[in-house]
Image (cartoon, rainbow, N blue to C red; front, side, top):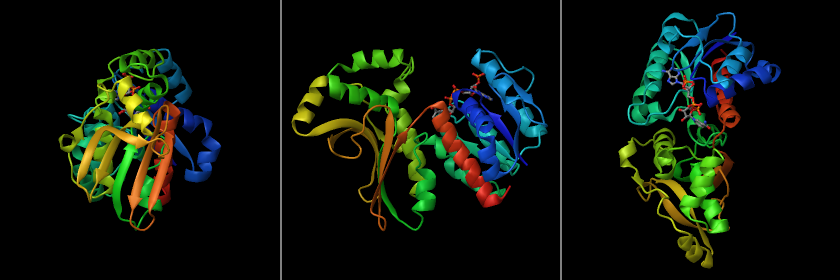
Length: 333
Ligand SMILES: NC(=O)c1ccc[n+]([C@@H]2O[C@H](COP(=O)([O-])OP(=O)(O)OC[C@H]3O[C@@H](n4cnc5c(N)ncnc54)[C@H](OP(=O)(O)O)[C@@H]3O)[C@@H](O)[C@H]2O)c1
């Protein structure tokens, strides 16, 4: 019986809970029996060692309600027996908190961690990996980069034995949506951004996305975890998309190019940057809408391209569930 605790019960935490409810038969076949023994949000939580009523918890949060007060995530870590934590609290790439403390405390106790939270990995990747090794725990983070698009386990498992020369990717769906609409409709950045906010594709404060901060955080995770580098967020050269004009698209398209926000790490060329780049219209990275994509250059396998939905509650849950299955496979929990 795998006992799971879910920290953070927003879009991703609830998406995971929904998949755990809806796919119980399928997942029982893959990981055996499981139960969620605790869920928490920023102000409270539910603990039930016989299994939290996830449907009820989802209902409470969907109605903008709060989980019952009086339970904190740290209480759960200290007092509840569980095997794996799903850490899906808010990202903070400066301090990594609150996720960094949650992850440290779980790993210290030998509890495996599956997370969608970029902050702790951007701030303290090496420390967390060492902590996990020291305590014979696993740290899984497929969901931090590319949502449903497989990249971490793809490189680690399916491309094992390859040297990774470079990864070039579209790692922010909001920017890609804005740029691909500017390409098609030649409207201004401001016009598309306003519509994207209305559609819920862009946040009310879109700085994190449009200044390339989110993509840079993901790039740091890829560089450190897949390319053996030891880079920090501030090492990333970063330019966002706010100054791109319809005219820039006009000129690019006349020459057979489009413009995309590309996150790029290249060991040979010593590149670590996020910036708008000219991309040939037929290139696999010239994708449209909110999709994410990555082109991975390797020594033996050659070039590999992956494309997928980079965000969304269920899409991100897909990556978290795949990490849970991987955990089970390597541990037989
Ligand atoms: N949404 C996506 O498509 C997506 C994709 C990939 C990665 N991610 C990452 O996944 C994480 C979750 O994203 P999301 O979209 O689910 O965010 P969200 O909807 O804003 O939910 C965040 C959750 O974290 C909770 N929280 C904050 N502080 C907490 C604490 N100390 N203890 C326990 N819970 C705490 C919040 O509580 P309240 O409910 O009380 O506010 C909320 O339930 C973020 O790190 C995000 O960057 C998201």
